[in-house]
Image (cartoon, rainbow, N blue to C red; front, side, top):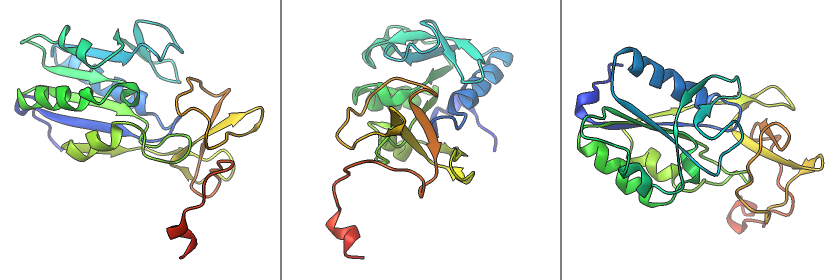
Length: 201
């Protein structure tokens, strides 16, 4: 697949935690740096697990980034000469992100975002499904289920060694101390409301 950044488009990298989403975003950013493109990388300020001014993968690969609290802040840092806009952990940003990133793609910018497509409940996470639906390219990565070794597409939140409850807050910043990669069948959520449609099957 040949990507021409001059045309402007959106790439979305999704999957559960520990699937390598940030690693893939950094890889694409570094390729653009090697090609001497003007790149600006953002991450939500809420994600402070590995530092304030770097996007960092779980394997400690990193690239410099700008912390932002809202999508509106992206506008302050993107210039006419900017070729590539990259955003890590995009699920933490507000709905205005969709409009702003699509507008930049329309203007000819290459936009690369990565984020969780499902929250710890196994439900669509924030703006990511909409971005994926409007993107030209979507890469869905999987991890390895810690229970059975199958491809993991879900993120299991653990609280005191047990699966989190359905009504716990959706956003809780953490890494291996709070989350595990799980497959569909090993993923558990306590007290999840019963779905009458599913129960009728």
